[in-house]
Length: 265
Length: 266
Image 1: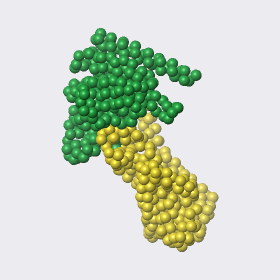
Image 2: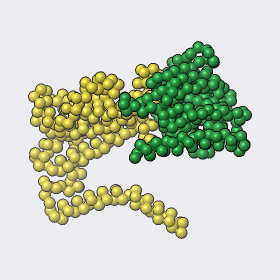
Image 3: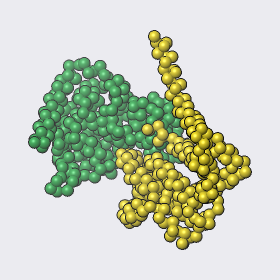
Image 4: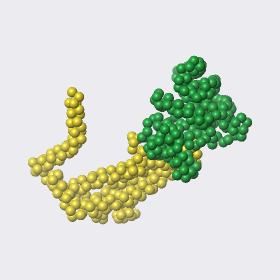
């Protein structure tokens, strides 16, 4: 009886582990069959097999790697600017009530503004070159980073600060040795949000900046314009994989820098 | 170190909505003794020891720490260290760096402070866990880390705010014995806040019973059970007499607090 129960639980575990992948395969097969049996034009919906052919071709001629790395450099540029400025402003606000009072109305006014609406203005000021793409993504990512950092610092457990005081920490030591490390997990979650919007804004900027001739956003728009739907799909898949890799890389970095925050949840 | 509290008043909030937490508390906590502060929840006992520890400001009255009776006053906080109910361990620091925190703030070099921290960690029975983080430890072990972090400061006064309240019954007994051992070896002045009567009798040389809010001192019960104290003393008639006396006082206060709450609710 017990043995059978164990057996069943083992097969249940197997289903639990493999079912998600089986379903992905099933969907792809259904998609392939749907396109082939109904003779759907690849312009509307290409079959997975032909998307894969395009993907391989783009990999082999180097255009995928080239455009992905250009997009990646732009993302990195925007993200680093946003991360550094966002953390600095957030920390300054968290540690000085006066700074918070001065900066808060600006953030309150600018945060709800859809940053994408700044694109025309930025193109007027900066043209459609690299600086425009980095500025638009940095401006967008700045807000979640600054706001999360500010919130993280304000939400530090006052008990920890009192404890540090009791153990002889000066106000300066309390900030450096307690407030900053205690708020790291919150700062990281701001960086995650910031990375997400940076990816969105860089690709969007690549799509909109007319003279842009590189990057995944350009590949998407260009392929769309000449109705190379397979290429559009291939670029979307590449972007999805790329986004997943970046997010997981970030999670891995989090665990490396702040291993304690992981076990808390 | 004797702790002198005279007409201590602590009020929260602005007039006319002030809440009186402590009302003219006056007591001399004797040097090198364990004073257990017993009272119903919300009687201001935690507030009082935080004031004595120099952590919270107070409204009026006089709190001082003297080198023996009539000796020179010392600044609040400089002679005492707190052990908190919520432990307040730094989750990002390893056990050894938690314990060495106070020395680090004082500028003691890394090698020396780690050496001293290791010695204290071993003395509270945590050898081998130096590099663990608090999250990886059980409740009782975390409690030992908190105790070690306070002991390393070598301050003559220990202020303990319901430190064992969150522990399970067995771990609590072990930690109480640990504290008895530490006290009997080091002869610190200990103020121990609790709402457990048996704990107060077992640990204390005196029990300061406080009233429900606003906190006043209702009575002081001297405990003259011999030292070294052991858990077996719980079964002696003397322990029972002390228990009944404290229970009687506390019951009055708890009932009064409940009546006050009912009145406020209606």
